[in-house]
Image (cartoon, rainbow, N blue to C red; front, side, top):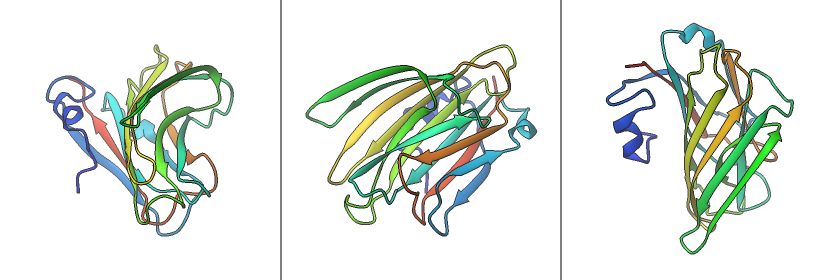
Amino acid sequence: MSLIPFGFWAASGAGGGGAAYDLLETTTLGSSASSVTFSGLGAYSDYAHLQVRLIARGNRSATIADTFLQINGDTGSNYAKHALYGTGSSVSSFGSASTTNIQIGITPASTNTANLFGPSVVDILDFNSTSKNKTVRSLFGNAGSTSFIGFYSGLWADTEAVTSLLIYPQANDFIAGSRFSLYGIKGA
């Protein structure tokens, strides 16, 4: 099953027209987990960009749960994030500076439609560069009793190469069956 719900992302690629996506790692949860980590990313130095494709559901006692990203274990206020999302009847946006994470999606939670999982496609651009702050962009969707489609972007204000990604829900856990795949994109 392809986790690219939005075909234009696959066509253009983060690294330019026709860039190839190579599957590097996949984690499928066999039981609930409070987070998922991809580490040792320095081993992928022959790639220009990374992409995480996730399809997840949380067990927060609500219809939805936000999904967040932290880079290299940085829990300080070194991130900025922006959002534009809609429900079909309304559009919302927000922006925050000096935050402790980047928001990358909204997933269904325990009171949403049963067995419904929500996708996010997250690009981490120039992850191995040591001369640039890191930019993250995410496209996500969520259906069921609370439906959204949206675009998030974020900044990690650090020029350090990205060596680990921590993905976690707003509250509680991701449930069993949630899947997280890491892809590498080679530069043109």
